[in-house]
Length: 465
Image (cartoon, rainbow, N blue to C red; front, top):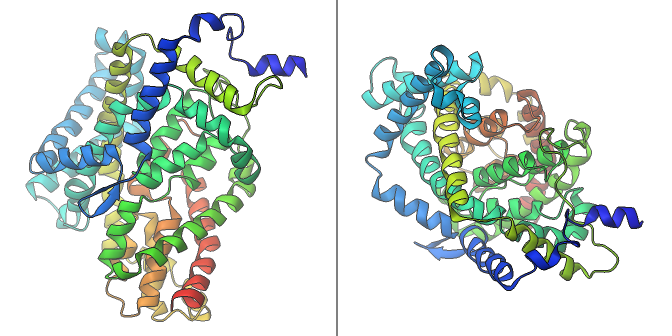
């Protein structure tokens, strides 16, 4: 037991506590944690809806540069291809001497081809030349003009401010305090609650970004990171309002969001306990190993230990320059590495969904199930139940033309609980070091659909219709 308790104390924490348990470090941890809470986790009303601080900043930036963002990001996508080609051919010294730039640009043939495809799709869409199914408003146009500007601004703001959330002890404090709830209920560390809250109040993609960074820094095992990314990156309140308004049922938003939360909570309890997530290894990211400790030593109260861990973490930040450097790396990694994939794979997914009967065919087995559940217009609703794998907003687009309010309600709520969609979250996960492949994502998407659909239908029939 004594040996275990020693392992639970940060290295050098007891021996050198006087060096870091100072008023300056306490104030630094407290002040920056409060700022992080205000930016990432505390909901505020803005333009008639609830959002978070970084959401307000991102939306203001997006509105100000709205007309320029598609052209700017097309240039960024072309630059990504040029620099990746340079890494393959000439390997300039500035790139070879940097592990960050080497990892960013010296990628495999598949990812390089995706960057080329993303740049091509962006150019064709911007100029509206070539096959219309590529640059159509429902395919490439949706990605370049609707999705990419949102991701560009959200990740610019989130990327720069994320070090404040991760490096000043807020994760350590909250993680230690809520571990007794998160571990038995979801088999996860307490700090995973922050991922969920950041998603809930802000953006599911920001939640995934937090999860990938926490995994690569040694705070989640492979299984924990896989579970959090596919079950806790919940749709934000703001996006939920957009969806429910799009299908013309904003008068039922409270019932809608209660349904989403209940169904999502049940899925988050069940999915981690069944394959493929339950079979992921309980090992940490190899290059860094285990860096987390939320267990409380016997000679500390939970609050004392949480405060000590928070201050110790904040004491490791020595300069603002390192924070800015990390923020710039975050943004470059997303703009030059992730968004080209969003443009490529997002456009392909939407082309398949909009211009082929694939999802129509795949949804045929759902029709009798929906009829058994007494869902009106089952044949029209079935494709909307699975097209969410391509993009989270597509079910609402397809379902908006259905007359039955009950059916539209079910479609919208289900799209919020499926979570795994390829145009954003799926690509972010496939590109990350979290051990999830495409087959894993398909299975988890189907599992969440199977688990949450009966709950949503039951709540809709019994409570609201």
